[in-house]
Image 1: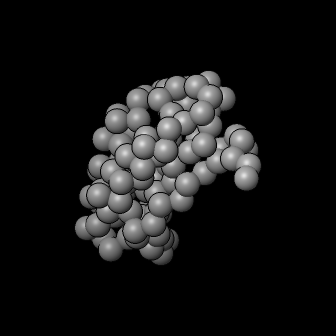
Image 2: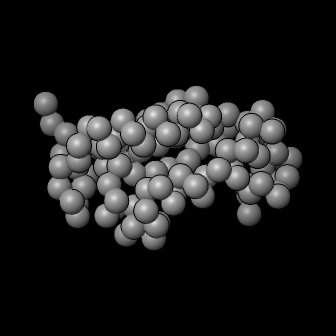
Image 3: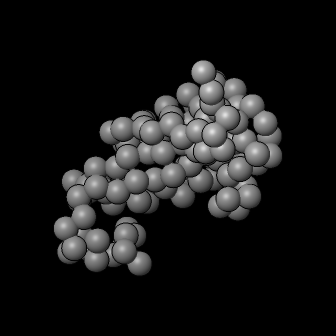
Length: 105
């Protein structure tokens, strides 16, 4: 694959920045990537380590920060928790996504 801890292909193509995608909704995470939020973050650890070892910057994206099609409204504390964990893992920037478009002023 293009990027994995054991592959040099992304680096050989000049990739200097990648992204990881998670969710603030357990239901969305399970239906979208078939694992819990915590498990998804664990899955990113090898990628984060490889990125750090190769000076590749990583952005983090959090889906369903306002609402979820399965759970409804999402608590801001959960969004902050996921974003904080991504930052602690080494993401230099965190993007918060209103995945289903319910965040209206």
